[in-house]
Image (cartoon, rainbow, N blue to C red; front, side, top):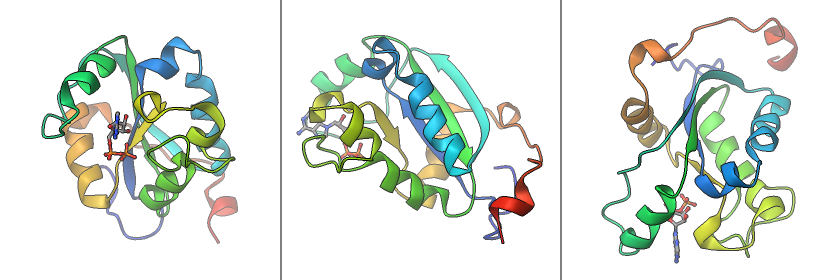
Length: 150
Ligand code: ADP
């Protein structure tokens, strides 16, 4: 991982914009939410493959869904980004996701819930390693840093 996770905005998380969202042209909306919050994009790619959720009981349907078209994988960086991103994404079941969250605003059903976001710092570390090579993460200084962190 780039950065040293010192609590000064170097935490990173993995976000997937799932195939339903790509088909529905929601990629820009999702990216914009993280940008406006102040997080920093450090990696992004469009690709078609998925193998992470093989332990889950709903695996065949989930796999078919995740393989149904391209998805966008991204790494976002910032202070408490894992926790904040989970809050922005909303409940797993779109029907319970609050208005204002990504799922609460953009989806209706648990099986087409627009995004994935890592659920802990440890998971984020593993998931980033699964989806990205080390040299695909771009280290850059954003010029608004002094205005987004006190
Ligand atoms: P989250 O994505 O909120 O972290 P989980 O890790 O529990 O939630 O589930 C992973 C994904 O599996 C969900 O985002 C959703 O797409 C799918 N999923 C979870 N529960 C169900 C369900 N009951 N029926 C269909 N798909 C489900």
